[in-house]
Amino acid sequence: MDSFSSSPSTGLSSSPQFSTEEFMDQLKTQLAQAYAEEFLETVRGKCFEKCVTKPGTSLSGSESSCISRCMDRYIEATGIISRALFSSSR
Image (cartoon, rainbow, N blue to C red; front, side):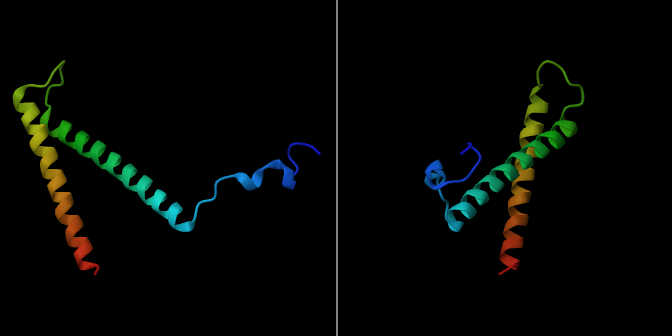
């Protein structure tokens, strides 16, 4: 038999099996991580455009504090919106 044919001796039955619940938990975790990464990248980009008028080798104090405040506001606003959406769906 060649290596592509399926037979009980190929060891395919020893591959790990995930339950549907485990699979869904892993999928939710990966989606949440991807969403968080995309969200932070979007916020960084928007805050950078808003706060850094003349890009250089380093940020000025006002640029740094502007970016910090901007990111804090985006994160706070997203939390408020999320809570409102989840509470209205119940």
